[in-house]
Amino acid sequence: MTTATAMTRPASSFDPRRLLKLREAGVFAALILLFILGVVLSPSFVQPSNLLSVGQQVAQIGIMAVGATFVIINGEIDLSVGSIYALSAITTGMAITAGTPWPLAILLGVVVAALAGLLNGLAVVLLGVPSFIVTLGSLSVFRGATLLISNGAPISLSSEQPGVAEFTLIGQGRLFGVIPMQLLIFAAIAAIGIVLLSRARLGFNTYAVGGNQEAARLVGINVKRVKLTAFILSGITAGIAGVLGLSFLSYVQGVTGTGLELTVISAVIIGGAALFGGSGTMWGTIIGVVFIGLLQNILNINGISSFWQTVVTGFVIVAAVAADTWQRRRKTKA
Image (tube, rainbow, N blue to C red):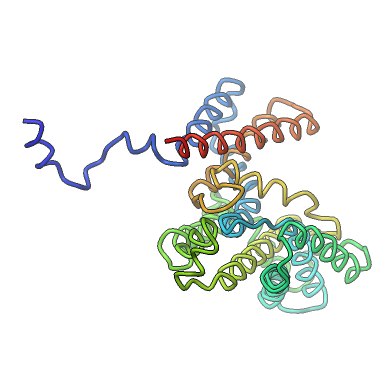
């Protein structure tokens, strides 16, 4: 009877037990618990306006995390995304202020960010310098370049300037007056990231390189190209986020984006990506981004000091890495 039942059951039938084996199951369960905690602590937490506000707040971090996911799965790290964020925003703001049409100004900002990512990648794959050291140095280089081209002065966009009203709609506008445009852009970029990582050859090669670089090379994968592509994607997503940040605030200065790299990396690691590469998913990164957004929102609603928010976020990061290490050891023993 059991055998007949098994034979007649479709191969694609849904098995709830599979959900428990997913890498994202742990962080998703933590996300659900955090959501319940938010509801208990504050009834206003579940109001649609608040949840949409959270979506808008995490959009820029989420966009940057999409690119960072490729880098981390490759077994590398990019500490310069906060500086690239500022460099792209300053470049775009200066171009608009100089009278450049806003679509071209956006393109210029993203191209500059892509070039910054390219420089990071070239230093890693051609010079053989560890990415931690390369991007730690480029963090200062790009930040210094941002301050140099702006002379350390902030850039503020006025609605009286040509094209500024249209430009700010990207960051401040809402579809049908409800859904933030930033959230929609994040969703679109996340969807592209999901396809590239789970359906495209780039994703297969990324996992292969991160899992065993030498084995990937022996089967014909161009390791240098895969790593270079990851750093370029990281630069592009940081640049897009920088443009959105400028569009939202209509203001940017040379120190904008300081510390963003830690939040971005935290979201990817909390989402289940292994710090040493080879595993992780884009869905996990999205869950990690939402987790950080909800955590910060709950702390804000309940009037918790920003200093304590930093402490709590740090503990969450350590817990996430510890859980990942424990899971790896468990699989190794098995």
